[in-house]
Amino acid sequence: MASLPIDTAKFTGIICAVPPAPRVANRETGQLRVDRETGKTVFQVGLCLMAGASADVVNVSVAGEPAGVQLGMPVAVRDLVATPWENDGRHGIAFRAAEIRPLNAPASAGKGAGQ
Image (tube, rainbow, N blue to C red; front, side, top):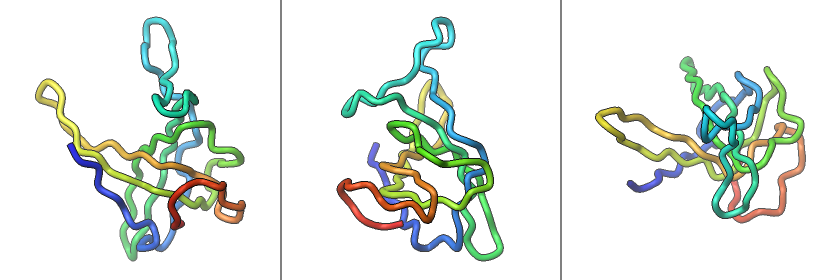
């Protein structure tokens, strides 16, 4: 399925609601999930996305540990996408970002722009 880009500039705030943790690929062996393109460990961060009077917490995957991101901290998210999925009658939306960093930290030299 196609990935849908999300314009993070439309949010009034994005806050870390659950600190970064490595994603587990195999619960039996404890093997961690690795990004196919970069070879970095994939981390998951719970982000509170605020827009006007509403807020939602979503789990966002990112390749590599988001340095300096802590619980309750405002963050900047680069290249956030949502990908619908379905597997054995279950379905949902997976969120992924190219980068998650503290709001006042300098952006890394990656492709794409945005908050």
